[in-house]
Length: 351
Image (cartoon, rainbow, N blue to C red; front, side, top):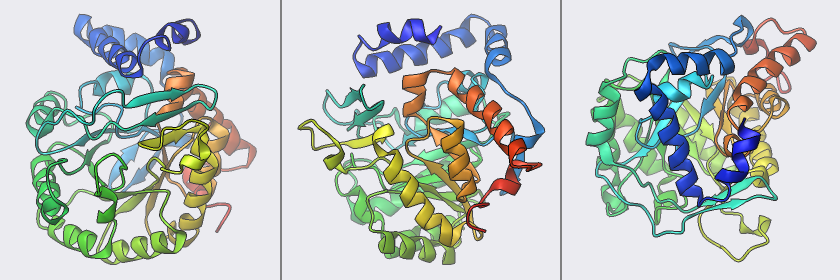
């Protein structure tokens, strides 16, 4: 069905198409919850081989939705019915904000990729909390992807993150600290030891939930390794590797702004992840993202040290059956390699 709908969606502006997809998932829940059950019967793939417990959380499968798709925690039930193993909402900021000027989202159809300069557009902490209170606790692990407001200076950014950690502590299962989006001015400069050390130390007083740091794939490898090492010393729970890229040399257009995601950064993200995972996968939980569009790619990241993977852009280009296809094929790949469970495959290439 998605193959029939996709040409129509792709004639719409990308943001409009995304909103339409969001309204459709929400609409099914509104019309009758049983419709979501029908959706789940089609898309959820359940197999004990894919189940694992990490950081005290149970994951039915390793495929999650990356932050940015459900900015306001508005379609958690719909995403659950599509077969994901965990969900991440946001990026949420303390105050609502409109984000950057439009147009700010572009399809790179030939490359099956996106270029976005959204700028943390969201309805703000208060509204998102209202949505969560209707659903939490949830059947799947839910992550809160949090960031600072555009008008908050970097000198005051710590308070924005601590505010959100405190506010969402009872309504999520883990946190993702987003300091790596290229679409909020100077945000990436927060990828430094002093800021993260202060944040992680203060966070311990506000929450006992796992905390992940989401880093940029454009960091120099040595710089990224040092950053991860310092965060581990300060008690971080894991890393999401990686966010969108600002490597505009990959483009054949004149837009030198925003972040690139999808197939265009697959190789870059994979190499960056592998380099970091080689050093840290035994010491922490790693989530890989960036260009994952198949079971083979997901399995490659898993064997290189990822316990979990996240997708977003591939969902736009390949449709909701992608989640089921990845999970089903992952089981076949695990059996082929004679693994009894996905955890046995994590880091198999570098153990």
